[in-house]
Image (tube, rainbow, N blue to C red; front, side):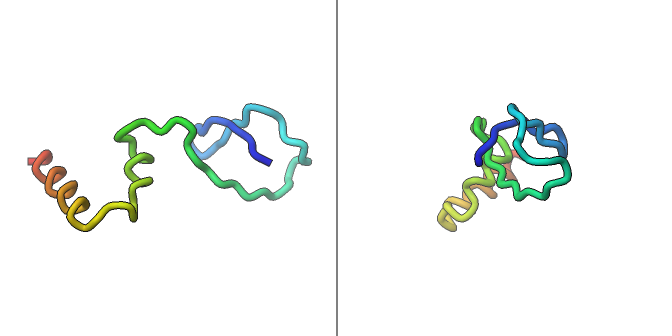
Length: 67
């Protein structure tokens, strides 16, 4: 079963009701539907996909921007 909703802090508000009784344990897998470019979620999605040179270039740019 796949449901959609919105995260508010540590609470997920679902768009529709769930046909399970209150107190039922569930497993939740979260994926963003509208990932904004440059958002923390978008950046984390890159983890493991960059070459060492690309990662070093990003680190160098971040250091440069901080100074």
